[in-house]
Length: 276
Figure 1 (cartoon, rainbow, N blue to C red):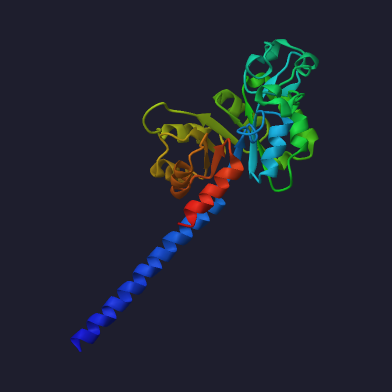
Figure 2 (figure 1 turned 90 degrees about the vertical axis):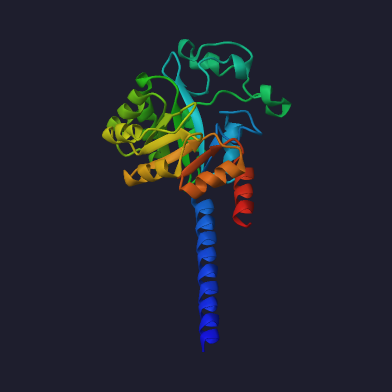
């Protein structure tokens, strides 16, 4: 009888262990599938950043969202470009805020990536918004100051796709101001640490401004910090992750989204990790 009882206990234990393993596997699969993959400056590993070519490729590679950067030109046009001047991507230096959009648009910002992209222009934000497919999002990173906000609001309103748009910025005045004039648009505060973990005071600051969450550099983001963000009823995204193991770890922590230069490849690598 005792041996039969022990066998029963071992059987129950094995069943329990298998159940736990299944639950952990299922949770890992769900996490990997639910995390939002954001194409950094479009699919910028393969195509010239912040161009219609890279944005379109991002959608073609099934990114859940695309991220682009914007500055305001001298004549108040919203230009899609990362740097404050055009030297790195065009080879000729024009300072965006001191230049007319027509002059900025004469530059070739595709050739630096290769001859296949010759002729790519600096896009207007409105052109990029037109490309957003149904069910996808565009993360618009404001690289300048609050002076852009009235023009951004006008652009968003005229687009007919305001429900697919998100605002992010390192400038807290920008994100706080954006949330005030466009409360219906999700707004996330960009931030980074060079060393160490993030303080929960950053969560409190974002909450006070009614922001929808945070978008922090991946180094220093802990599982506990993500939980604190979620406990505050906010989301947290991260940038820029091209290491699948790091992405899988953050997915397991519960991160809401990951920004990467290689959206299609990253999705495939995360699926491989989930299948282990």
